[in-house]
Length: 182
Image 1 (tube, helix red, strand yellow):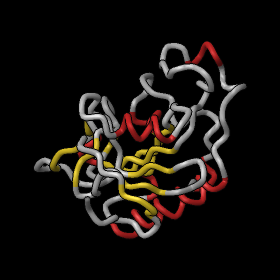
Image 2 (image 1 turned 135 degrees about the horizontal axis):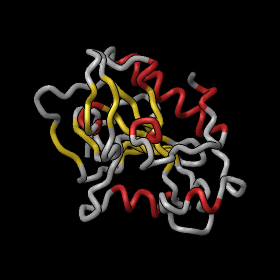
Image 3 (image 1 turned 45 degrees about the vertical axis):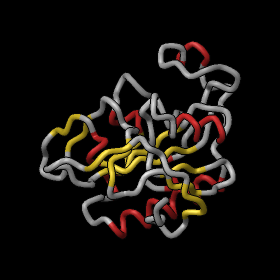
């Protein structure tokens, strides 16, 4: 167990899926994700499964509760194959070591289907699950807290998973309203 890093955390649910930050890696990004899963229990179980090796720093429930899974000082496995330009103008491959990951509970276009990047376009977004106002409020408070504590993370480096994993990921989705931040 560990103490939460952010003021709004309501629960700590540790994930074993993390590592130490490597030399040269520093926090410069926040990556926002949509879980593409129907329930919190299933999503949290996946984010804690040592065989799957996926995790995040924070998880926001549909009700707006903030759960921390990995301390900010450690690297969570959330961004996968990803890249973005860092503060020095250098393209960084593999953003896990450079970012904090926030999963926002949402099944996206997969209301009754398992997520699959190849099938996202087939089902369309007409049946998407909307994000809740409670989630946007919690996300805004959490990201403001993170940016205030980590001067290396600028407002412009709060990005969606789709922006750093082009053609590979679509979360947090076309229905995600960036108006809460941008």
